[in-house]
Image (cartoon, rainbow, N blue to C red; front, side):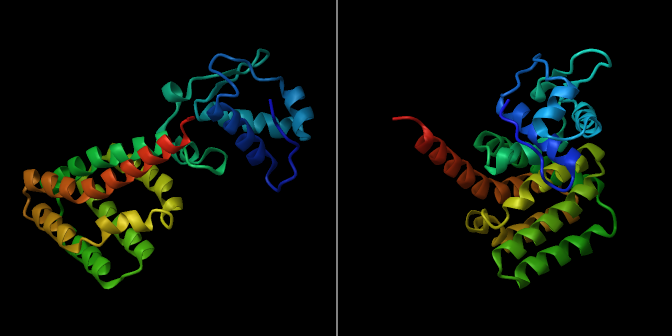
Length: 243
């Protein structure tokens, strides 16, 4: 295992990060046993309690099985992990995972219209003002990153109106994964966040309670930038292929 001594402030956090990176990279395969607490503490140059805390966090995230008096074994992240892992999976080792990025974009395109549809069916009396204020903010600012943030606020209101705790938690995870890349995505996302007329059309459909129109307007809004980003990912993957 290419682990390194820990010299940073939060020792358990650093241990967790290094072990997580090993799990994501495939350095530790599902079913494989981790070194003992004692061995990990020696390799990392930390205390056994720090290692134990990191392992418990990994177990809580569903990434390892910790059995007292037995080896700690690796679980299959794709089968055992939750949405809270998305931000870490998107940037393992500090570099973007293009496959994870594509999956987030695909989820966004399919989930967004359904959330808009539910919001149209379940809207509360305060929703109209919230959405209209968000659209006005989109129209008032020209900075691309600021516009993305206002677009996120718009979708937060729509998601809350859908009254689905599952979709709300999914939105939280997708947002957490997306926010670190706001500046990098500014150029491509301009094709979406600059379309204030499209946000207005979606707002009108939701306020009017037209679920079918809300679904269609949301897909019309999300698809162009989503497809553009997927095209960029395809190009990057092709450029990384060995010739």
